Length: 327
Image (cartoon, rainbow, N blue to C red):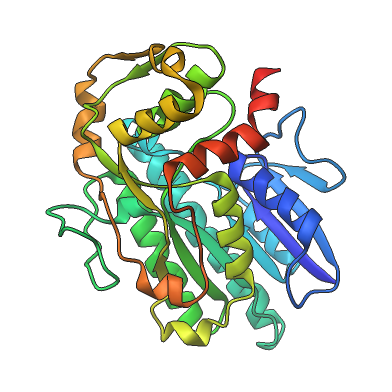
């Protein structure tokens, strides 16, 4: 029996991952016991799994989770980019210090086991670890130089996970997720929230605000791809990473105008007419510091896959989340 913990299991990606694991399991693992940990859970979320409520930044919580010695830990919990930028201390406390306490807790368990306990830890990092000036495409050798607090917090967490893995306390890897789109449910405080909002709201017959110019280009993948990335990472042979344990993941580079064109193709001009441009200087400034396109050759060679068109991303939302969002 393989013991799995999803930290941040009440969030959208955590719920998508849990659903995938229930349906498909993990290659090489005959049976899973899955525990979801988060500050709260959706009323109509994935059912039939153990749910534990708590805050990873609360003293003692990391030690309690580690003491159960799970085999695979998906660490998805964080406050999002806009909130981390606005609430500086909170961002560092939750996004970085919680990772430190978690890794220290697993190191304690590793040492108590005489070195036999080495959990796989899959951490959701972000393309926000990169900052400009950018090349035409960011390849696997481009330096990490974040220009936001959120990006800096993710980058520090990546380095910690790499060092704890180098020492043999854990076996971890960091996945630099594209912006996940189209996210179901309500808008969140992420500066990137509008990328989903300009698709989700019109598909649900609601108005949407576009806070940036439609020439803005960005890197996307669907929630379905995010769950697939995480499941694939859980079984990856980390010796293939050669000590470079952070991966740029596949995605789709497109402009906001191309997003809107895809919406028009699938839902018509009536849906597009629900989008209203309303420039937001704060969001414009944050988005200017984000990468736009990638050449994720390492991840592709390791078997990670994503969508090849924004039409596919919208179709995934329609197939998996539009009925829930609408009713």
